[in-house]
Image (cartoon, rainbow, N blue to C red; front, side):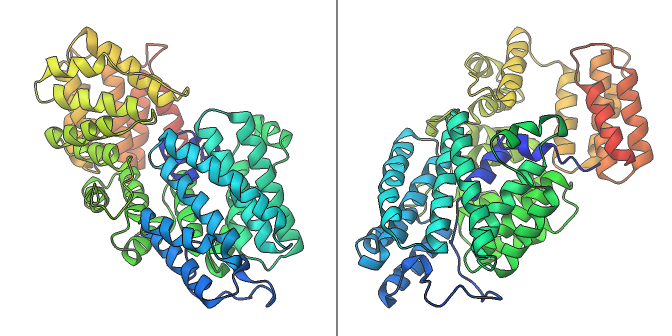
Length: 482
């Protein structure tokens, strides 16, 4: 079974935020030559002079390298030039957008809206062209994502609808304008991923499309876009991961970008997240460290979310002291709320696994949920249980077994989890969790018959209506037998 329903909902998760952040990188690379060019009198981003074109190229490269302070200087100079006003203002807005998305700081949100508002009159005075439509669409999409990040979902939907309609209009009028296919493709995949019972919601706001349609458009952008090839590759990789269980070329696409932009925290973050999700902990650690090494280097804008992800991959390798360092650095540095609950729980568990329960308790007691995220609520409930009593020996073994699976050490996971299943003192819920996680390990190894047996064992142990292991085992067994 292809879990098409989950991409739409993933936009409110960690991976969804990654996607939302990257969707806005319009025009950050101009590698290669497209199959067809825009009309010769349609100047790219209204740029007509050699000096402005050089500034545009340099600034885009600086954004890709995530040297945002340098890029800001470059685009500020471009914005002062007569033919660079729109491009300069748009990329200054994009820089503020990226700063906000990668830090969640109010100062960058405010900066973004100020720059977004300044861009609007410039677009109103710009000559009609596909580039004006593209900048307008991307700017509206920026605004929608920032609104959604702050929980302003109605305003976000309205801004998204404006962006979507602009993309549709662009491609209808200019079918060879490949820059617009990336944005439209993302919309179509997201809308096509909505469960059938909820399809009325995007329809209500005027959205349409299918996953297959979106994939074709993204591939067209990856093949033929002048500016958006890299970003389309990122989306195709993320869709492969979220919808098709990493069965396609996602890893190859992202590793190629990571190598091409060596030293860029942005591409390290994207590729590391893919490795993290596909349970390649050691390789994810290596990639994340290239981004973590830019911390306060004075050159790169630091991506706050690198720290909790690096902490997670260290935790999965049972390196709890190192994990605690990065969890704590994130919590000390990060002003926003996204990922804070899970990082706080991770820090508490890292300390408790080292026998430092008194210190762990301070973190269990201060987990706060925000924005209605399910992951936050789960973290808080688990912390509440941990406050009542320390981890038992069986719970520690279960945690180590989960870590082994999450790090891709499947044989070690089987050995640890089998101990729980065979322990006569284990509770039904503990045995159900152990069986479920063994099923996941068998599943990842391609040992489907054994995975089905383990999932069935998890269902058989299911005696608590609040326990999640039985329902999850049923769900995984369906995908296992498909």
